[in-house]
Image (cartoon, rainbow, N blue to C red; front, side, top):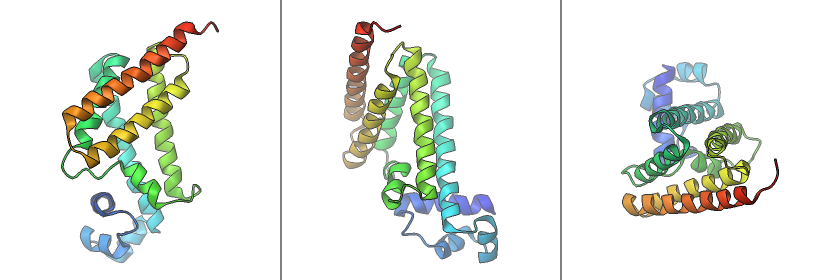
Length: 191
């Protein structure tokens, strides 16, 4: 029953927005009773957090698979750029579910915002690990720049669906960030 509720939330929250979807609508879509719904999710906030954690788990798994298939950090970053462009230009894409949710929950103390922050911190660490493999020293700043590129690419893909152009531009922008970081690393005399 829990999975049915989450499946309904995943579909409707992403397609129409979290605040736009009532618990009653999800109860009907999942085909469960109110008692069953509230047994699994005592509040809508609990369901929102579970939805975001589920999305995060799917994204983490996909990124880890890309990393395993690519074989090295540079190839992984290229694979991520291609995946972002393809996904962002695909039918039914409505933007990053984490950015969308953040726009709906302005309070940084809200449980949804905490789930979003946790996932984005994981992604930043994932990128920093790749950058470390590439010998980049200022991994915090470079990871932040790559995340900005990711976020911008998702918006661009949603607004103008041309995956080939988006892939090319995202890869060029990513290379520019990495080349600048390498130049800074080469000039870095610290141990």
